[in-house]
Length: 214
Length: 214
Image (tube, rainbow over all chains, first blue to last red; front, side):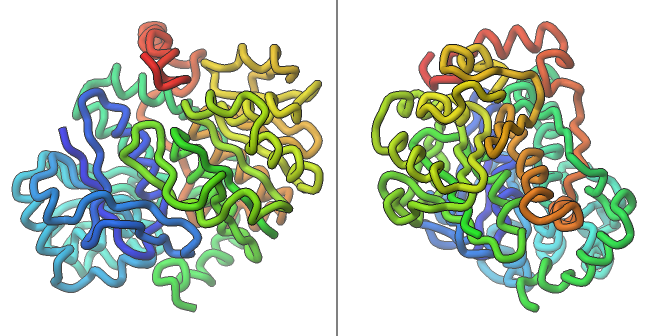
């Protein structure tokens, strides 16, 4: 089984690496990082670069597509090589998935029309104008389309996907292998749980978080 | 504040990227990936490469040191450039930290002698022979030394560290920014919680998981 994780400049690293370190542990799975051009692809801060070992043309038929988010998402909201690859690859994929604002790219490419989906909580209001049906769940499965909420939700999404691709035993073994027994030091991971003053701080940086531009 | 994340061949990506995507969000923080040689550094599977933008010599005085784990840990258990850099850098660091089997490297370098520490649950028995005092907690703080359990525990560790480096509001804002409201689909993240047959599956691969060798 081939999993292709799409990379683009100014992606968020954990969006990609969370699912990577889950899905790469499924026996018989090859996970490939692919981008328009092969080579190092920088994240939104620029201090991190993951290597794309394939171009999009090299991987036309992935079994699983994973689209991360990050401020660079804003560069892929109109028709272009990424959308064309996504639509063609989606035609033969078993699963088409996203993390964080990656769902906005899928939706803009026309792949989530009329489908339930999620995104980073700060970007949730952008889904409906793109034709998707936003839900508040952390991981949303609608047919073969699986979307995850912000950044860290890609780990939960990938474990759920692992149980579908393989089975619950494999998914649990992967979870135990990466010791995913989360103990966040605060109850601040969602806008419903976080103290209002913390929500206000993050909302004040909304534009910067979503686009990288102050 | 400078955070240096040590990279070495056959590291586990999520061990490094979890803390990266937390600590890089602390205002005024520069996070640098450093290795013996600058350039792409491959993970244990080889399908992922993160770029080290600095050599160890380039970053002699980090404020925070983060040592990830992964099968390549086994290559850094004797005196050498990594141990020498760790000892020198630790002499001036504010925090010296690890994720997963990164604690074995810190301990082998002599930095955890007599200190409470943790590691991946499969490697916990290796801490005491290296002079550390193993504990079962997910994140262990002893003075300026903060060690985390396996792989995904680096996210919890980094959030806790953020609250010490900055304050609880910043830590919560970062947690909300990465939407860290974990919802693992199974209760299988620790050997105490996982079904016995799942623990047995992972233990059967113990050597491969820890060393990369079957």
